[in-house]
Image (tube, rainbow, N blue to C red; front, top):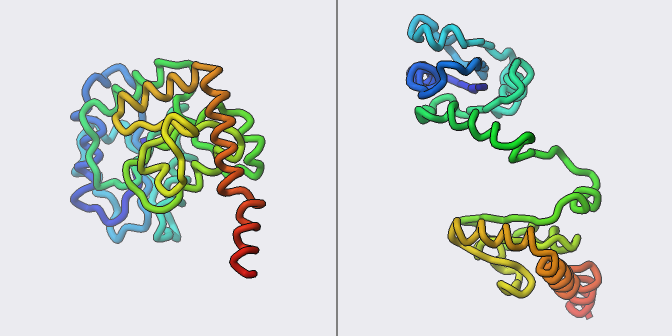
Length: 228
């Protein structure tokens, strides 16, 4: 576990305690706690920590710390010795008692990671050629969601909440598959992913909607009319 802290004299020891003494079902697990201090006024007082935390702790004060926690997170990831790493960007937060145990169980459910965070993609066409479906489970937001339109522009169907498609002129069960409740969203994802005929229908309909409303040709035509 990587924990980023800044001027949390009272909160940090409590957060660290929540990662060891009060964690359930971790007796057989070998994990470390890497604390990266992002330029705090006072160093961590290790005398306030329990033996369970001390034996797992690696502490790194960061020189020349920036206001953003990004450098501290990267330093923690570099220091981490485990193959699986969890990050707590806010060291003032406490972990729930089953966090470590259930995280460990979750990663053992599949041979590969369930979520992959991709770095900057210079070639979106190559990226979208590798995926079958986009999911936009947004609960709040405003304005047109570029991620939805971009996916449609490459012929990749989208499963989304009502908020995610606001302003796009999309129609549920026509050129996008929508749902707002968790179980309905999960069901829509499974149906769209597993039904080849339905996938082809939504792929074509979504791409056509993009061409008719958001393509370079369409926008150029609209702009030309505005300046006539």
